[in-house]
Every structure is written in structure tokens, then in C-alpha cells.
Length: 538
Image (cartoon, rainbow, N blue to C red):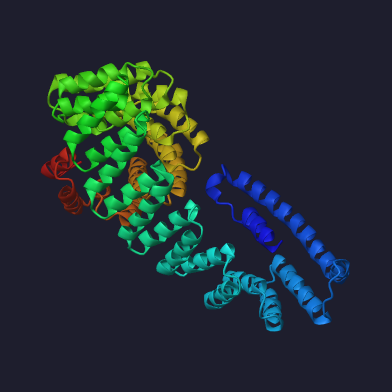
């Protein structure tokens, strides 16, 4: 009964939040389970009380005669369990201690006492009592498993391994004991011994993925790559129709730089399934000599990108490295071939938001802002819940001078993401460009409220707000605002330049030039700074 009570408590009160989909759902589930647990607790206590009042009668019905002391010990044991169920652990520990004083031959109270002391974080007492329980009942596996758990909790991995070794020797058909034995051997730095444990288990169960993959990981951790590969190869040979095992082997060969062996495995996969996309892409890469910008390789990718049955994530994994690299590609034909892959992705997966998003990113990188904006709009039509896409689109509106459209677009983003400061920032930029300075300042102030965890954004907001105050001829506020920004990032060239601009507006030309020169130290390619310094003017 007490073990069930503990299990229900663990279920009701300790379910990991990662399995909940929202805070409200988590609270609802938690409340429901807590109520169920309390109902169970009431039933359990009632049962224990019934047992307490009826124990003498029950014993008499069985035709056995017990002394009054023996009956009182059992009542005391039941009372101790009741206190444990009520989570009055100090009381429970005291009562279980009293039971062990009166009955030194019964392992159960020592076991229960060990569990209570574990809850109370008194590890030495917990270990002492569980060892006594095991001494009194060497055949009870639950006692030994609890001992192993205590060892683990106290980082005594070698001792925990010894417990499971003994259990495995007593019950060689229980593979759980072998897995735990090996696990604690690995934790204690005895990987070689863990491999022997798995070898012995494999002799009983035969080759299977659980054992092979664990042995593979251990060999790899030990730096024995050849042996690690052999484990995956053995698994693939044992299950020749499972193509996933061959993929695992090929990926491992790639991981350790054995391209020749990886190519052999991929060729085997293609013979098994000529339509296998991952193998086809890998072989195309090898045939191109790993020159990812090779037009032949890009052509192979193009053929695969046309196939609807090839998962979009497989394609994106191959396309993603080009998102930023395409901007630096010197060969026009190669650059166009890369962009064509992005376009092809949107055509083959016309309802996938991420297809338009990644193509938009590529167009943004090559400076085709108009086309990128169109792809971002298509992305949001399919899925408007990804804020970075909104942010990229707002940036493009700003760069292209689409200020009227940016006001509407940013306000739509503000409605969907009211806690994102960047939306208010871009809204302020658009209003400032429309010379609606009061509206701009209001938006910047809201942006600052939302940017507490983003100092880089806050610095930009202070800079933009300072500029707007400058347009209003409020030089004092302009100066104070940019100074606040510089407190966040004193080396930010845009803010330093803005500070110089404000000083110049205030008639402090020499001080302004000093700030512009300082900003140029952090942004040596700034054309505007060079012009201002040369002309000694805005």
C-alpha cells in the first residue's frame, strides 16, 4: 500500500512540464492529479485505520495466536505508514524507528524507514537501514534496487554497478539488470567492463539495436572508432532489410572522415532503394569532390528538389549552408543555380511556409529586397506565427522606404506579438520618416518597455529616438537620450555618430568631430562618417 501511495504521489506531483503544452493545461493536469491523489490518500488512510482496528479479529480468524505486543507492533507499523502517506515524514521516521526497536528481525520497517530518510535527505541513515533490510531478506530484489538508487543519488556509481551485477547473476534472464550494470560502469569510467557486460547479454539475446548502439557509443567514447563502426556494421548485417541501420553506419563513417567507406554504404543503399534522397545527395557530393558549389552537384540537388516525395527537411538541410554563402559566390552561373534551388523548393512545396522563408533569406542576402519581401509575405500567408519573418519583412520595408506600408505592417505585428519591442521600433522609424514625430516618440517609448532583455535593440531605439528629438529641435532631450544609449553600449558606432550629430546641432563642432572620429574607429568603412569628418559638417 505504501509503495502504491508513493507511486501515485510521484505521478500526481512530479510529472515533467515538458509533456504539457501550455501553462494552463499544466496547472489543470496538476490540479486534477493532485485531487486524484488526495482521494487515494483518503481511501488509503481509511484502509489503514480499518486494518488497525481489525487486526486482532483477522488474526484470530486465521486461527493464529499472537501476543499483545506483536499486535501492537503491527498497529504501530500501520500508524507509521499512515504518517508517511500524510507526508509527515519526521513522525513517520520516529514511528518506524520504534517498530525496529521492538522487532529487529522484520526487514519491512527497515525498508520503509530507509525510504523516509531518503525523502528527508538523510542519506547515511537511509543507507544504513536499507542494508539492514537486505541483510534480513537477501532475496528481495526491490530492496537491492532501492539500495542502487541511493548509491546513484550519492554519486556512488561503482557501488550501484555492484548491486546490479549481483542482481544480474541471480537473474541472468532479466536484461534490465545488465543495462543498469553497464550504465553505472560507464558512469564510473569503466567503459571496457561495460562492453563485457553487453557482450554477455548479447550472447543471450542475440544482436539487437539497443545493445549494438550502446556498444557503439562506448567504443566511440573510448576513441576506438574502428570497433565503433563494426558495431553498426554488425547491426546492419543482422538486419539487411532495415535501411536505417545502413544510414547510421554511413553517417558515422562521414563523422570520422572515412569518406571512402561512407560512399560504399551509400552505394549499397541506392541499390536497395534508387529513390533514397539522402544517399543520392551524399553520392552527388562525393562525385563532385565535395565541391558544394560544383554545378554538377547543384544539378543533382535540383533533380531531387523536384521530387515531392523527398521530405522538405532533407532538402532544407542541404540548402541551408547556401543561405549566407550565396552572397559571396563570385560565379554568376553558380549563384543563379543556388537561387534556383530556393525557387524550386517553393514550387515543389507550395504550401510550406519554411520553403518561402528560406528562399526569402537567400534573396535578402544577395540584396534583392523586393523579391525577398514577397517571399516573406508568402511565408506569413501560410504561417504568421514566426516572429523573425515579421522582423525581416519590417527591416526590408524600412530599407526600401515603404514607410506608409511599414506603419500598417508593424501595427499588425504588434497585435500578434505585443511583447516584441522590434515591432514598436520599426513603427517609430516609419512615423519619424513621415514626420509624425509625436507618434514616433510614443512608439519608441513602448519599444523601450519591451526591450529589457535585448540591450542591442534598446541601443538602436535610443539612437532613433535621439534623431527624432533632433528633428523636433529638442537638442537637450536628443543629447540625454543618446547618452542613455551609450551607457548600454559605449562602443556602438551608430550611437557615437548620433552623439556627434547632436553636438554639431548644438553648435559644438569640434566636439562633434571628435565623436565622429571615435565612431570611425569602430566602423572604418562608414562613408557617412568619412564625409562628415572631411566636410567638418553634417
